[in-house]
Amino acid sequence: MLRRYVLPCALILFVSIGAGGLAYKRQAKTVYSTNCVFQAFIHLSREDPSTPEHAQFIGGLALQEVGTVASSGLYRRVSAREKTPAGVIASETTTAPSPGLGTFFVTVMDPSPARATRLANAVCKEYVSSIKKNRADQLAAKVRAVQDRIDSIESEVAKLAAIPAAKLTPPQKVTLQTRTAQILYNSQLMANITSYPPDEVSLLSPAGTVNKQKIGDLSKKLVIAGVAGVLVCFLYILIGEILAMRGSDSRGSGSLDEHINERGSARNPQGTQPARSTVSHEDPRGVH
Figure (cartoon, one colour):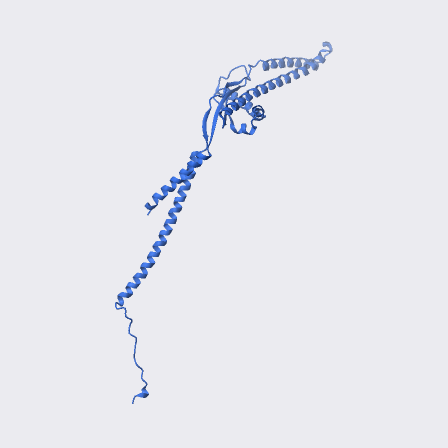
């Protein structure tokens, strides 16, 4: 029964999959991708990371700095220099961690190979310059906070030092010793903050090589086309079977009528009608 549907269904599937391929070819866009690599190795100690946990901590600091820059108008600043809408740059750019201490890939996909390279390098350079500025501002804020604390303590110490030692009360003497120790500790803290190794924030690899590729999901379109072809094939089989069943019913009714007629002919082979009764009913009054 199903053999007569093999060829039509194969043709339906072929046409459906072909249509899916043509749709992909018509809708797919050619783009060019390139990437650059930058590093944001933040130093919070004098030692380089010697354990996986320390390296992971460094990576977390770098990711935090990158996130801060990205959310502070990165694409808007690049847009102003490159004369390209910020929304276009954001939609074409992907930033992701790469192997290494605080290193990141910046990938740009654009219909123009020259603009893809230009935007990738612009974004990487903006990351580097913004992270450097943020780190300098953070360091300056820490130094300023410690210096303000030292200035406040020194002001209090100066007031106590103006009192002759013989006139200092025991609590004042304790306070003077404590504040002096605090000045020493905060001075050491400032020296420690300003003596960290400089952060390693730089462009490691500028964008150069451009890769051509198609944007579109061919497999998805082929699967959809295949499923549509199967559904059409099922519908074709269903309609064919319904029509076949109706034809069988019609032929069956015709055969039944012929069979009844044949049985009637067999019973009356001459085709004559049975004789009707012709009994005469005479008037009994006419008989004498």
